[in-house]
Each structure stands twice: as C-alpha cells, then as structure tokens.
Length: 257
Image (cartoon, rainbow, N blue to C red; front, side):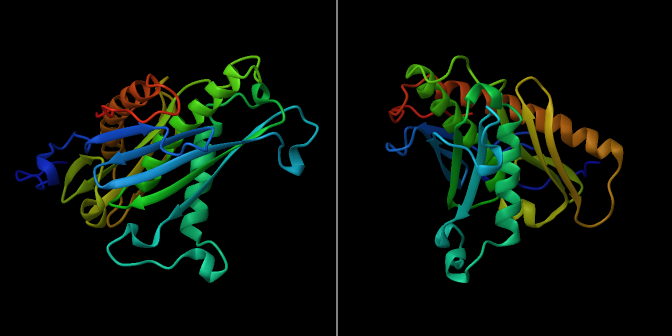
C-alpha cells in the first residue's frame, strides 16, 4: 500500500495529519447561527437562516426541514471562475455538493422536533484548496447547532433537535500512499479519492469513493476509512470547542485541531 518514499506534504504534515483547522463562530452577525471554517487554505463561510415555514410539499406534516446551498466565489480559485448566476443555472457539481451537505445535516436532526420551520445553511467558499464540501459540512453543522441553540433559548423548541454531530473529511491514495485531508495538489494527483461523512457516534452518513485510475481493493478502503475516522475525531473536537464560545461572538483564540 505504501511506497518507500512517501509524498512530501505542504506545511510539514505527516500522512495522518489534518491541515490546521480554525472555526470562528458568529462570523455573520445577522444570521441565526454562523461559522467561518478554515481548513488550511480552504475557507468556507457557513450561515444558518431559520424560517417559520417549510416547503409546500411538507406543509401540514408537523415536521421541519433542513437544506443547504453551496457556492464558490469567483476568486476562491487561482483563476477566476464565472458566477453561476451569470450563466442562468447552477452547475452539476454545485447541485451535487449542496445536496450532499443537506443530506449530511438532516441525518443528525430530529425533523419532528423542529416543528414546521426550515433551516437553510448557506455555504460560501471564500478560498478553495481542496476539500470544500468536507469543510462546508463540518462548518455548517456548527452554524446549525448555534441556530438550534438560539431557538431553544427563545423557547421555540420543546427539545433539542440535534441527535449527533456530523463532520466530513477527505482521504485518498497519492502515488501509492494513503493520506488524510487532501489539499488541491494532492487531490489532483490522487489514484483514489474519498470523502467520508460521519457522526460523532462513529456512524457513517455517506462515503464517496472513486478510483481515478486503477480499481482499489477492500483492504485499501478499510485503511482509508480508518484514516478518516482519526481525522474526524479531531474535527469533532474542534466543533465542540467552537460551540463552547459565546453564540454570535468571534472567538479571540480560534479553535485549532
């Protein structure tokens, strides 16, 4: 599985290291909950909006809804990308990612406890260096938790709708070596690329795995999932530390994992 000479990684990271993680809460003061998450050079602004209504197809069911929208700013990348609004429609990648974020968050929410209200998570990529969908899920959970905390403080919820925490991390095989938390350069060169979404109860929500070249074995998948679990434990620690800070205030000493 591994080669004698492992790939050199940016920031002096070992094979099983995350990039520096920073979560700043209250980054969007007008939102019911918000978090700016920085995973290395990938920065995503996540904001939660609470609406006292649900989509028409859910009306009258005494259940709430959680959904997400995802976008990348034009200069989040090295070369400017066109705003999708100027093209008149969202691209397939955008739709796929925001559906993933929504599924991941709904997996840890008791929708009945929300009542007939909707929480929308906006995830805007300010800077992209690989792993934007994973950072979005991890940061959006913090924004969602803050919004639920606010609803409970305002006596709008009878019980906590959150069943668990959820986070996501990328893993992959680059030049024969399994790596945790791929940056863009590593992701571009990966033989195998996986995104793993899990709860802090050690349960999988979604696994997205692709062989970019040759098919990979069950043993390789098992190794990657073990590596992902190690990184996710650190991300859950970062989420918990961020949520200990006062709601709506920027952390003076940002959480790092």
